[in-house]
Length: 359
View 1 (cartoon, helix red, strand yellow):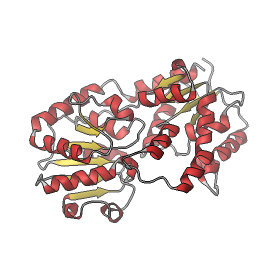
View 2 (tube, helix red, strand yellow):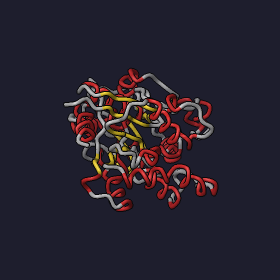
View 3 (cartoon, helix red, strand yellow):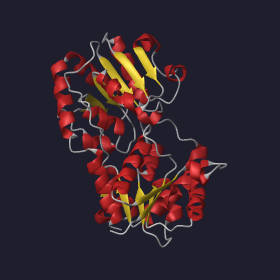
């Protein structure tokens, strides 16, 4: 096969310490393993800019400076509008369709992500969503992370089922069994400390468990914010039983998971969370929201537990159930590990490469 030049555009740099960055690294590895060239254009290649909304245009300029035409553009949704109709096949990938998230945010009756300001209502559609809309409407095909996103793209943008490819994220294999648990019952949250990750429901559930006298050790990892900042929105009575880890190197992930009894991710909106996949690979009992990619991965009471968005009382009841039923949580954890065994990165990245090269 003739060598192809894949130009990958994303406002996130490629490194294995972030979700999107890790996914891109595995895609690159598979393209290069097959003998193709993979060129990444991210913020550093785009150069300094006065506002993040300028990234799509700066990325196009960075590509033009290469003076080497791409065989295919592989572009993250928010930058994709600038790369349509350039005479080069365009594959748009989404880690959670932005238009769907926007519609959910401005109409959310639960207020789980907070109020959308008037300024955001006026500026977000212009500076961000128009690129998403243009790219998804005109790309040769779209890579979507969940069945919810796939259905939305088909309905909202009028794309056919054959034009939307539901891709899978992978796992790093972990030699951890469900029976490996810490002595003290420990709940792990692994995600940025923002409303979209469901931190309001998590904090409320933690308070409810404390009020019921359920002894829980909490680990809040990869928060990206200092312990001082996180604790401002965390029950004060739980501070002594809470460990906060703003960042950690990827090779520490296995240790964190081995030291957890249960993994929780009450996110309002996601793509296909790597943190959840890794917790499943570590045979942890996972409690997460019944939406987005979580719904595709977790089947309630079969390999984990699901909850509606923002339902703090149910989240607390799920955690309490796991506390009292060690055999039950280990059964769910073992089933979770089994359900992701076919998701090694070498397999799932190969699916992406096959699809892109078919262009």
